[in-house]
Structures are given as structure tokens and as C-alpha cells.
Length: 476
Image 1 (spheres, rainbow, N blue to C red):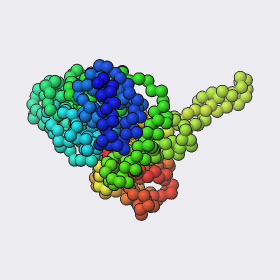
Image 2 (cartoon, rainbow, N blue to C red):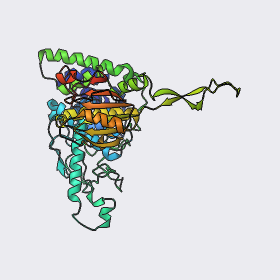
Image 3 (cartoon, helix red, strand yellow):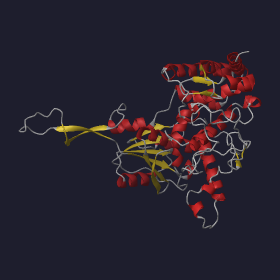
Image 4 (cartoon, one colour):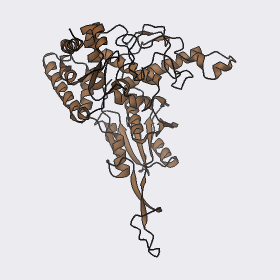
């Protein structure tokens, strides 16, 4: 049997466990790629596979990996990764993000768990390179698992720091407190003896030595230590393109991806008519978000500030500082106004009161911040409960720190930010369980509402706000 025939059998074998994903899996376009040592998917719907790798792992494990890679694409992990770690992350952040996504997928594929290759990431596996087990709660989002892993790594780093020592080497560079310094392949949960190539300290700062192992292959096509270990997959895992990936012809992004998602959603409805409740909710929610995406608050912000959603850079104003192209050459005629493009000054206020502390609500807030970063590169974020607790320029959601946890007074927060920062627009992420200013502020206000539609709190939002309801998000 040739490797291609074996791959075909593996794709068919997925039908025995996830028949409703068949049309999506069969829509992936095969790209035979010798030497990459894995199977991977990019965000353009291409399935890359190494003949030697497929032959070695066999039909059943290959079926698991194919379903695994398809879920990276269904869950839109490439976009989520860019929201979490930005457009140009280091190796370590990419790897942690890949692990976080794999934790979500492994739980989704619980019906195929017995086919899971040894070394694949799962809840409860021990990561000796990091010094702890992935004993996190179930059913969290990719963003939440990323946050939990980074927090645990930071705790490990703090434990390893010498107490009251005077070692200059420890103070400069923190090399001894690197959570990956103990060696091991963090991808397999079984503690290989290689040194992790994390490229950063546990808090995300750059470490002195960028040349270890245990992080993604950096798109170099290296084989993973074990089949199913994260790090050597395609760009759909962490949003970063690999050198072996082919240039997209645009068909998947334009129509093929949506068609595959629509067929899959229909197949799920038919499957559940005779097997009610048997399809993981994360898959259904991810398809719903693909086919019926929720409004982007920053598109609404651009509409409010610039009067046109289509304007990608800002509104237009007139000034004598720029010479008008219609200015006659005669010096005796009046000076005409030139037209300039103005970048709107937009800020985000996150309601960090006690009622907003749920993981799902935090994920919605991070989603709004991530959307703002994509549109504006950096965005100023205020945390507020009864007072404004912090204000920082945020370039990636991983650097955002949740400050607060007390009562709620968004009226005070809006008035203070409007008075001191003088923004053009404010995006307020809140469950609206608060009082509101007595009069409209100077800034335009877009409320990204995290609560349930139609409630008293929802209806109490002032009419001078533009309200965008953030529907329940998926755990992908």
C-alpha cells in the first residue's frame, strides 16, 4: 500500500468517529510534502503530509491527526493565536499557544481518545520541561488555557529564583530561573532530555539563549519528537506561515471554507436528529461563528468615528497645514484648505468588577482587545470597577492584566477617561450592571455588551451609546 493510499484510508477512517466532519475533512486539499515529518493544515485549507510519517504512524493514528488538524481550521486557531500573541511572536509564545489549542482539540475528540498518539498533549499530562502537570479545568477556551499556562510558568519561575541572593548572574538575564532550563520536550508530556527552544522567559520576555528545543520548529519543517506533539504543525496552529506552505489561491478564504462549514453544519443537524446531543458543542459554536460572525465592535467604532466602515485609516479633516491640490498657482488668490486623514484616538475600558470575573466573560473582553489590536496595532486599555485601576498600551492580549474585582461604576470611569484622555471614541466592555453618566460624553461610546440580550441591564444602556451584543463564545 502506498503512503497516499494509507492517507486516503485514514481520512475515510475518521468517518467512523466524526461522520459529520466528513465533508470538511474531504474538502482539505492534499499537499504531499516529504521531509516535514508530520501532518499539518494551513489557514487556506491545505493538508500537508509527509509520506514517511504517515507510513510510520499507521491508519488509526493518522485518522486522529487528520481530525485534529481539521479542528485547528474549524476553530479558527490561526486568528485566535494572532489575537493572543500578536503578528510576530517569539518561538516560546507560539509553542504555548499551540499547546493551548491542542488542549481544546483533545477534549473535543474525546470519542477518538484511544487513537491519540503517544506524546500528544492532553489535560493531566506531565510536562517535565515546565515542571508541572497540565491539570487545568475542562472546557476552557484557547485564550484561557494560554493564560493559565503562562501564569503557572510565571509561578514556577518565581519559585526557582533565589531568595535574597546576591548573584549578579541571576539578577541579569534570570537565566537560572528560566522554567525551561531543566530540559525536556514540553510537547510530549513525557519528558524528553532535550533543552526547550522557548526563546523567552516564563513571563514572555526574551531569554538570553534562543537556541533550545521544546518550542515550535519555527516553520523549518523539522519532525516532532513524537507523532502528535505540538510545534511542527502548519500555520493554522499558531498563525505563523511555514516555508513549505504553498501560496493560497484565495478560493478557501473566498468561498470554499464557508461552503465546507455550511455542509458540515447541515451534516451535524442530520446526525443529531437520530443522535441528539452527541456532537461537541464547541464544534457547533465554531461553525456558527464562521457562518454567522458576531459584529466587530471596532468596525462599529470606525463607523462612528470616521462615518464609514470602509475607511481603514481614519476620518478626513481640512487644514491649511497641507496645500490643496486645487490651489491655483496665482499667489493673489485665497489659500484653500488641504485635506488630511486623521487617525481616530480610540481607547478600551474593560469593566473588571466582580460580576465580570467569569472565564467566558474574560474571553469576550480579550476578544474585543484583540480585535482592536488588529485594527489599530496598539490600543490603550483601561481597567475599571468603582475606579480606574490601570491604563496601559497593549500590543498583544497576553500582556493585558486584569485589575479590579470590586463594585461597578462605569459612569465614573467613562467620565474620567473622557475628561483626562480626551479620546474620539471609547469602547466599553461590560455586562452593563452599572449606572451611566447623566449626560453624553464628548467621546462616542460603543458598548461591547457581554450579558444576555433583552435583560433589564441590556435595555438600560443609554441611547447615545452604540451597543454591540457579544453572544456566547466558543471554547475553541
